[in-house]
Image 1: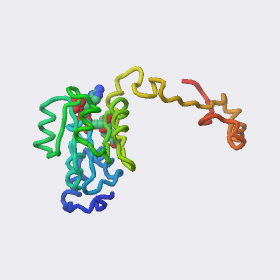
Image 2: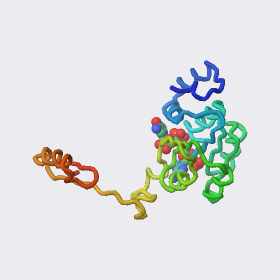
Image 3: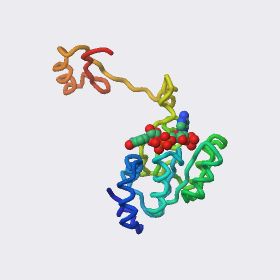
Image 4: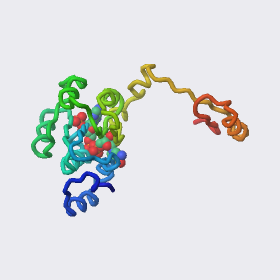
Length: 191
Ligand SMILES: NC(=O)c1ccc[n+]([C@@H]2O[C@H](COP(=O)([O-])OP(=O)(O)OC[C@H]3O[C@@H](n4cnc5c(N)ncnc54)[C@H](OP(=O)(O)O)[C@@H]3O)[C@@H](O)[C@H]2O)c1
């Protein structure tokens, strides 16, 4: 837990509340990004159960926080009840334009709950040395085929599969002789 990295004053009670809250597993991902005073933080699904806490903790740590959500009601809640610096409706605004408007200097930390297309766009707006907490990919869970640059042919990934456990040792030795192209794996059963 690196809350003290922020140099902001956070009470012991806040930290205790943070640790005891049922949504702590989601919120804890923020600490992995070591937020610092003055850094810019973008939070998607801003009103989600765990995520609403993330934005508030980022504010306590002295960050500038902008969230996005799918309705005006959630956008207003983010600004008023949760105290984010700003929020926008990602269904009603062009994401690239919104990110440029709210983060003209770029994003230091992206707390990602959505994944894929939104993540692809946010990456283009990250500052050098920015950090992304890959908390979840809720946009993908009910899809038959995942979206994003992987499925648009913009990124290609090659694996080198050896068939059968009997070939495992030669597969491993082959790696040290450069016989593999990409990650070497051994298929021991097909599902
Ligand atoms: N890493 C961990 O330890 C951990 C633990 C629990 C959950 N998670 C992940 O954290 C994320 C948020 O979970 P939560 O429990 O805080 O959320 P939650 O309270 O269940 O809220 C989920 C929100 O996600 C948004 N959403 C739903 N479908 C979407 C879609 N197709 N595209 C984009 N947004 C969609 C909706 O917000 P809008 O109306 O604003 O779109 C919805 O209110 C999820 O990705 C979940 O898998 C991670």
